[in-house]
Length: 313
Image (tube, rainbow, N blue to C red):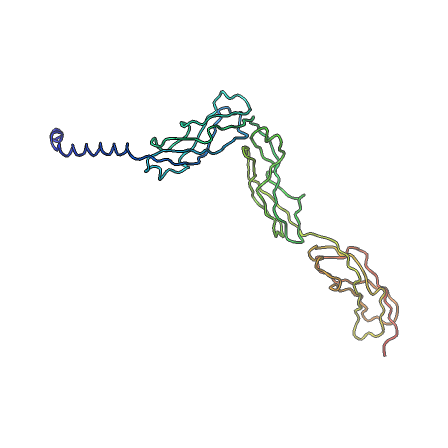
């Protein structure tokens, strides 16, 4: 059967061969076009004691030539540039290198590198060290009016982080900050888990997530109120003329700052309770009706001299 197939259908075989050769020449002769892409540059260092502290370019621009059918789907993420610094690099310092076409990783052998810009890349190598840094919260905004952040009571867990990075960077640092923590409009304490922000080239060698307790408390203050009118309170059947000395008083109140800022002297009710007292002279404590969130600063009661004279006819 196989021998019969080999000796028969010569016409069909000839047509197939012609089509195959034509397709091959079409592929070889397909028009190539050029396109420019910006691609990431990665530098690999064999010496584990060194790291890059500065580099002139982290991306490069390449001009590529490829068949039109490939160019349409050729995205920048399919291409990258990788340069290796071998064991000949012994210590920290400034270096430069020329990026070669064979260091551009391409998705197909039909894609060719025409140009690379810039031609030369410069970088600074630094000694790689480890250092422990304190963690500080980074706050944005302010709590609601009348409330404040109690900085001395902030708790961070953990409160320090072990990092690895360039010596020139880490040796100047004592602490790192967290991601921003928003305080705008806060009226009560809260917990937040945040990430630690590290400089470029520095990485965490321990837990980089921090559980933060942020204490918010109502703000307290003192305020003086002057010339507050003193009134007398007595039973309706009581008679006589009442004289108060003094009939106006001044005092300090302490308590909620937001409440004190809105409170005016005429809003305060201050009085002496005469009950059913009759003609005579008395010394009575002043009663000041206040909201539960404020109180008199002075613990000593204010005394009012009261004189009740002849009863009215």
